[in-house]
Image (cartoon, rainbow, N blue to C red; front, side, top):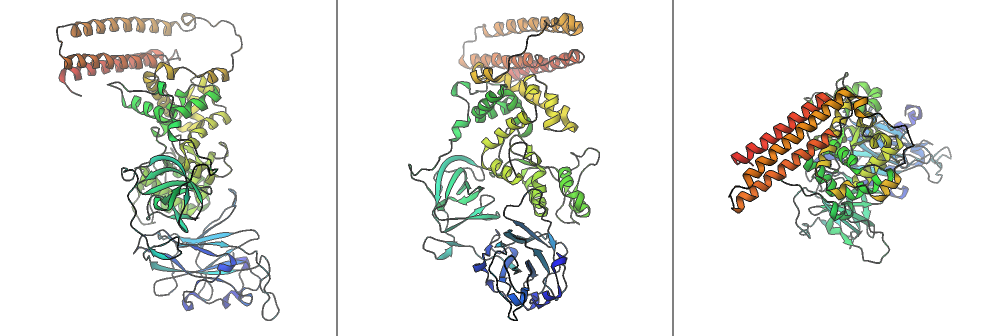
Length: 632
């Protein structure tokens, strides 16, 4: 910035002598986007935007920024920065925030504006919301100076923006008649919903207000991220109370439902698939029997919600959809979005350090920390350099708080550092899953769970993991998907949830679709493999002993069950009790034999066999104890 600054900048009025002027540069494309702050809150208000005259500018191409307090005095805060971006900004184009550190005879800070850029700028760093000035560019006609010298020429125009710390007034709403009035009380919702819970909806609507705020979350307390205008088509994907989650003009956000009307059928809009199309066929849905474990419940819920999508993508790769169920449950318990409608994320401090902290070491250390030996652990943060350290991963509200703070420092690096949605794909993988920018990935993941699930299968394909998944090699999968540091941990989780899912899904769901069978390549002919007894005598002996014991235990339990159920206990309640006993035992043993089927390593199989058996026997004993004591 300093290379474009000269002593001519002293001709600009200083912040102390300037009065609010409003937007005087609208004819040059400047527009003000108001900060999303509740009434009475302190924020940075843009009170003046000017296009510099030829005599003031003298051929430069800058945006000059001043910040004043409530009394009109220049604000000197070393943490305060000018944040900015521009339309079409690429991933490899940095936009480091600029300080407000110039002397009193100059504007406090400035930005260069280059040919072709259309810039948006705002203030950040002190925790206050800020108005944004948008649409600033230099592609304007020549304007000679009064002395005939160098004034404003094409691509050499400048602006001055004045921010003032202020209290937020009541927010007006622009109605169809063009008059501003206080925002009306929202009407009752068409269908009551639990506060703060995103209820899926799928329909196409049209904006009816002259101008409608698009917000980051469902409420006026959330940041405004854009504006929609009358007649703009929107795709509604969900509802939180009176607020609609919409996709419009490539942006995902929330608008008040009062100002969106359903589009008339036949108008040519492409209506997206209904939420019900995500589910599996009715005959493949899972009904949990009594006694199902929490792992089984999570796997069944994920399948019942998104099994249709999983079947489709699994068929394309020729893999069992149960693997995808296991990955989704291991990563996020199968949850794509939180109760507030925002997608599930996890902010990784060490990744943010890699993409931003290395170049900003001192600033990073003021706000973030992690264990240097096990970098995925010890994640803490604080908003101020003297604040107490707080854990980053307490809940989703904190994850988003940390992410938004990091985003104010560098949006791209912050998005690279989060894992997103149900599959928890890291932002830095955006190109691998088909997105040119991480911002596109972020918006698509927020827009629809379909995009999240598709990315999981795309990741498998482009990273050569399909064969590993087909062979049940979850260690290889986890090393690529989760990183080598926690590969064993995540591989174990995937096996656990795969076994839980196989233990509860129906025979119909267990069968691969015809497309899946066709997609799987036929193995080449090979010499007959040695028998298990030849390849691993110890494992074979352990298997035979275990199977024998299993049959004996099954027979004992069957006799015990028959003795109890055949006694003259004819009351309905007693018979129902016995039915629950049999169902519970079925679940336990089904899961037991499923887990045994995944034992493939002769070296570890005997120990694993013993551990699994002991766990199963403990489950059986617990089930009988609960039945006889009446617990549960």
